[in-house]
Length: 340
Image 1 (cartoon, rainbow, N blue to C red):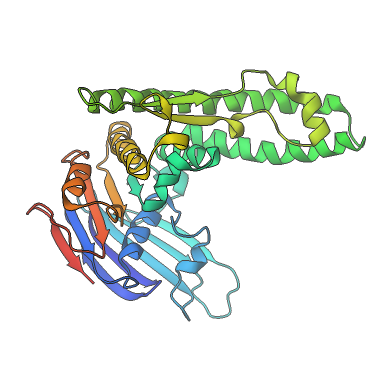
Image 2 (cartoon, one colour):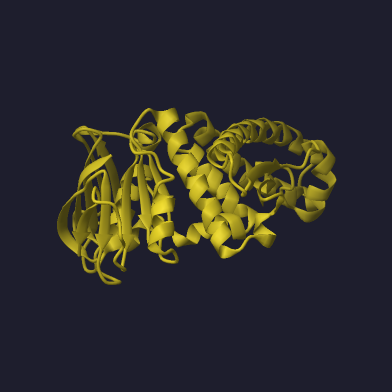
């Protein structure tokens, strides 16, 4: 749980400090920095922004760096500095500090778990398979060091094997050189698939429990090509592409036994994502044993007050909820407001 947040030289903030509560709504006109507050919290949690792939874009105009600091989980201090301290410096420093000590992101992940819910998350249901794989990865990276390491090795293996496939295709390398790469990618794929399947099993149990007695039924399935790497090698050489591996698997979402991607309405898609995010929050809490902060960035933009309350009630009382909204919402009395 985030108790306070300091933002310096980040986006449209020069220097601001915010006190946050178990239930907080951040209001204000468009462009005043509501999403930047959630972005800062997410960066402190996982080291990445949900609005851009380049941290340089978070640096306030005409500044050289930004700094974020938060008190979390009963006065534990986490701080992140990104940029250059000196005008002549060409590189970018990146330093994460936890309880006064420098720490690597791989060692910090899970200490401050967050769940992110934005309107773009509708793509988990309606978008391409790559979006759903990234969703699985975003959850498992926070709780499973073995998964993180396997993913990093797998991504590197994909690049190097693709280069070798091209060399084999133009007769500059022997097909036999692919044998150790197939063994490596098979082992890593098995680790990644096993972790994803365990999480999907958790999701299905959670969905079945939450939807018990209701008309709607949401089911998650995992689809992977069962063929071994050796059976695909000729086609891989022909196309010079990696056709075997976890990077081609699919997370299938069914709504009332039909493909949600094909048949779900926008309202149904939002419902599916809401249940997934609520289950994700519970999963992170169980696996990390740390309080979970749920970041809802304009997630209620298409909902009336009644459905807004129903969605918020999906989350457990011990999860911190931080919500942004340009419109006035009718929320329970325990919600505190930050007006920008």
